[in-house]
Length: 374
Ligand SMILES: [Mn+2]
Image (cartoon, rainbow, N blue to C red):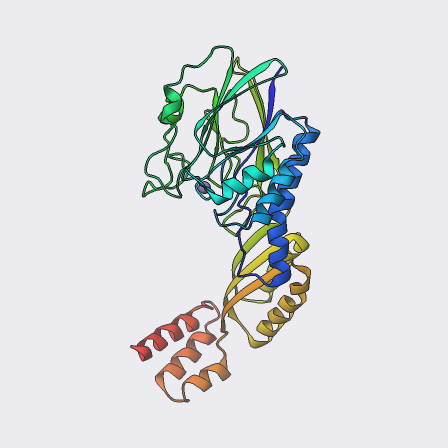
C-alpha cells in the first residue's frame, strides 16, 4: 500500500493585486481560493491520505481574519487523514502569540486541518503505512540559515516513511544570491536522512517531469499564476510513496488564469496581422494580456493597430498595452523635419529612394536627431 499525498505550496492567498481595476482584482483574489478548492476536490477524488501545504499558504501575516477562516474552511473539506499546513517565509511564525496562526488554529479546531508552525515531528499510521512528517517552518521572513539541521540528528525508525517538510530556496534551483531565504543545498537535504522532502518557496515546480526513482525533494510551484513572471499554469504534485523507496509522482495543473506578456516589434501590416493571430490563439476570457509594442508604422497602420486593440479589449479578462511606435519616414515627414535644400533633407531622400536598403533612411534619421540633441 502506498501513501497518497497531494502537495501544494505558495498559494499566496491575500495578494492584493492593487494595480488592477475592481472587477479584475476580484477575479484574481477569488482565483487564489478557487484553485485551492480545486486542489482539495482533486485530493478527495483521488482519495489522498494527506494534503500538504508546504508554506506561504498566505501572502503575508497581516491577512484579514475572514480570509484565514475562509481558507481553513476550504481545507477542512478534505476527506483524508489530515491537511498539514507549514508556516513559510511569508506566513512565518516567529514564536509566541502570532495572530495569523492563532486565528488559523481557532478556525481549524475540530477539523482535519493541522498548523505546523513550530518545528517537530508528527506521526501517523494509515492503511498500514506508518509515516513521520518532520516539519521545519520559517520563524521569519528572511533567514541566512536553513531550518532543517535538526532532522539529521533524529533517530529514524525503520519501516517508517520519513518525509521532511520545509520552505526556502534550494541552491541551484532558485536564485538566492544574498542567502536570504533559508538556502538549502542538496547535501543539507540528503544529510537529513529522510525518504524525500516536500518543499515550498520556489514558484516553479521540480523535479523535472519524467524523473525516476525517489527524488530528493519536490517543489510544487505556485498553484495559480500571480503575475507575468509565472509562465506555467499553476501546479501541485500528486505523490504515491512507499517506505521501501518506491515512488510515483505526477504533476497536476491547478490554475485557471494566465498572465501573458507579448513584446513585439511592428514594422508593417503583416506584423499587425501576426500579432492579431497570436492574440486570437489565447484563452482571452481567462488571460491578463500585457502588450509591449515597439517598431515603426505608417499613420494608417498605426490607426489600424489601435482599432484592433480596442476590439480585443472587451474579450480579455484584462488587457494593458504599452505603445512605443515611431512613424515611418516618408517625403512629408522629411519635409516637416528638414527644409528642402538642407543636407539632411537631400541625404534622407537619397536613402529613402534606395530600395535595396530599406532601413538606412531611418538609421540616418536617428543619427541626425541624436547629433541635434547633443
Ligand atoms: Mn516563500
